[in-house]
Image (cartoon, rainbow, N blue to C red; front, side):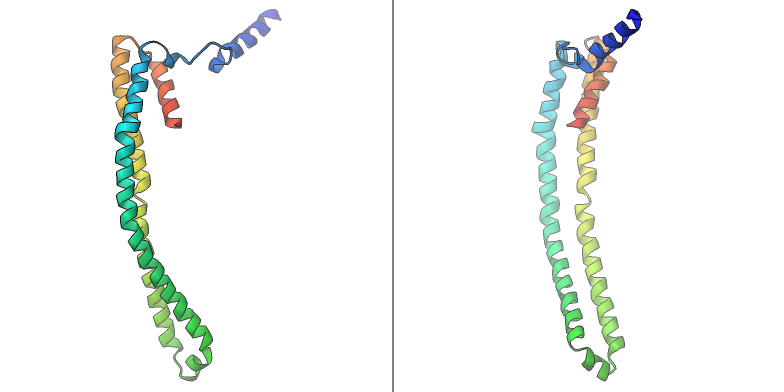
Length: 166
């Protein structure tokens, strides 16, 4: 029975660094190079590039959204006018004409919305490309460290899991 408890408490003490065993294994030895590389990639290269790209996307998307909102205002004005003057529209048998005008306005709003969203939707793939590029570079340099014997494969995979959470 004592052996059973020893195995349980031993595995708990070593699991996930919970036993006060110090920093994770990937943080030791020459692995500071990868941490520095990650910092360089994220803060000197990836974040400014990502920031400039998002700025360009948003600066071009803002006028498109303003145009969409103006068309939406026009649609709302048309609906309000038709609700107020419903008796006049019916008296002059203009329902079909007003339906066509409403459908044209609604289609214009829909087209403007799609045009604006197509540009904004680029931000997520852009962020994924940047993140995956950083991971590829970390794997490249980490692979070199593994080949030199200064880094273990498990440590690299643990490190990549850690940076994807950031």
